[in-house]
Length: 501
Image (cartoon, rainbow, N blue to C red; front, side):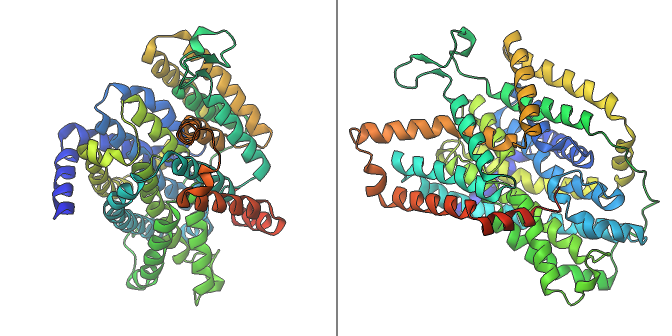
């Protein structure tokens, strides 16, 4: 009965006119972002974060969440039609989706992606509603030492599951944590690492880091690698799959939903890992293995279900522990904080309307996405004809105005330019900015719980080993770090994400 009453509260909040309107705006924009290669939900959420500061907290979070899971839907459209994945998790969809389009079966491929995405998103939201409150109750029993170990565990797992060099990812985590310590000491108030600049006494602005590292840096990279976008192959017809298609996609959708729901809670690129894992599973167990890569509808339905389920369940660690599973969730943590809400287990009890309203909005958003995607396919593909040279000045102007409007401080604009150039240089050096943002967001939490645990234990570091939860998490952290640097494991990580490049 508690669940039903909570869901009633959630829907009464999510169905308010302004919340439905901004949910619609979020999923619409997310779909457009997913369709356009090179922008992505991370950069979009980062650049739109400033304009949500005048919203009610639940409205802002509903809109930002809609952008994220809307991008998972939109990314499949151009992956299928023109072999350009708009989102990284949709890269595997192109392997079979585009051959289906070339065979004149773009309609069934798009329908399989939409049906799988809707089913997976709906089921994963149920899992979120059922699993989040008990996990939040368990998290309330954590002490400072346990939270320190948990945050450290999350950071290391995000490195192990991400692509690229483990050493570079570790360096980015460390740089992010260091940037997070700039400002006044959390206990003494003494300025540190401020270089005498009064603007840094309050710490580096989260929005400036996010917009610069993901917005401006991404634009610079796209300008360098701008490529011609092919035209639509033809008119999409016969959207509804045949009876044989429906029979073939049922199993992959169910398996993809289960895999995505499980992998989505893991730190790192859980939604990307889920889609590639689903494709590998379907190819391994299929009786039509030779069709994979040449237009197997299972290769569309499974991965699309997996990445959408993962997109929903990635909210579980955010809402229950206050820990972001990937960069978009790190931006959501920032949205919580700027609205005066501490993300974590207390949100369930202190902000029930926000917690359940956000969950209920995901059902509403999934329905809106189904209604938006298939009927508007022609419009989404026409977006690709807009020259990037026209798009990027508008994006930069929007980002600068939004950030400046927060405090009317020119320093924030300079910070955007600095972090944009820094992000671009890091990308050119083969370093992903995502671990830096995770380290920047979680660094203060890591430091606070480390110092709090040592204060309680009067400086005895053994407190981290004498508490069962923290000891177990630290042991797992060391084990995962060792496994991540082993040559055989590193080779397997590179193989998993090969097609993503």
